[in-house]
Image (cartoon, rainbow, N blue to C red; front, top):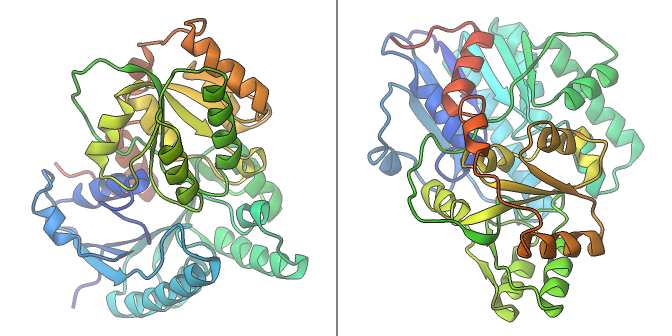
Length: 385
């Protein structure tokens, strides 16, 4: 049996996880029939019925591991899921004997560590895409015992140093990795792309706000809900639309029930999410300042790619603030209740106008095609055709 040329390992995948799933699907499909490409992921449903309706082509084989948890599940359930997936990774590597392995931090720490260990035994190259720096990202929202934190950090440092190439999202994250590993290893920066290739939507945008993606612990959802409620109590008239699931999804559902200017759509597919983003002038991007050292919100690229003006809620000294400000993608408001409400009213009164030129600046740099080219260059792989 011939060895697999490339094994792509990412627990979250298309079509259920649009942030990176669409891009990795395009990456896997960008090879010709001479390359043996396999993808290992987790999902509650098969990918193949969706692929029959997908416009892309390709010769990849998709291998699904059943998923028990979701982003709203308890940490214990998600940990069990991660361990189950890790055992599958071991079996898969031993059976497929890949020549190259691409793995991200989804799931974090254990699966990449397994890939690092087996790379020495099975003699393959592996490429580590650090989407989130763990375990520090977890430590932002949950107390972790220092001894256990140091143990997990040591494991991940080993993985990073063993990787043939390391990829991350921002200069801020690159600096943290260098400092944490006490090394000057080469790290490539590749910003996550928009979660959709192209989209035509000819309806005019309405003045208002949309939030898409994970409504989790990093997204300042309680503060955002409080600001929206108070804004409407004070006579604010602009609507808010929420798309996605996560730890605070029930609070968002409740907000939509009691506030007629708010709606909650739950989990939708890529096309529906894009349609909803394009229905509003402003896209909400709240983020915990501390977590920007270890992660970057994936929905940001889709917002800019689709031409939304970004309403970021965070402090000044972090990667999200710099990205929004330097690229003139929108405004940044400090995570202060009164400041957020005041800027809602400024937008309502037209004091902060909508900028319709954003998508022209970001359509190339944040495209899926550019992301695929970047990965292929780093992995030293030939593009189809």
